[in-house]
Length: 162
Image 1 (cartoon, one colour):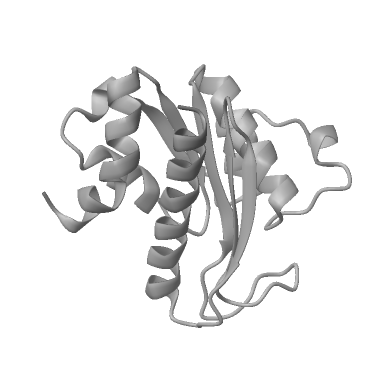
Image 2: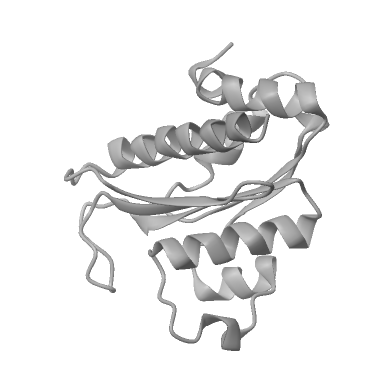
């Protein structure tokens, strides 16, 4: 198995063994979370779909989040990540929703977050969100750090729900 699949293997195995499904909304991860899940053989048993919601345009189109749902919420926050996790879960009818939003680098985002900042959320029978600050400006390294943090959080939530 490739490095992609190895990153998702724990979560993928739990999802597959339990007959549960997942939908993904990612931003600064650029699709790597979905790619990792899809690299595990048998992904069609648990992976329903995902979207890179990098802009407000794609966020509205893929997640159907109305403008009024964003009142008082800004991108790259735990609250926004949780909204996205809930939205992708609802849009796809999955057991779990996983969302990531942040600033991969080499500079920060327009909201004032520095490079290496991301918020990740899981929505399902267990809901949780986290913020990660890598302190790094390397875009690709940050993207992989975001992916690894997303799978740690997802596995924790899956295990808590056993």
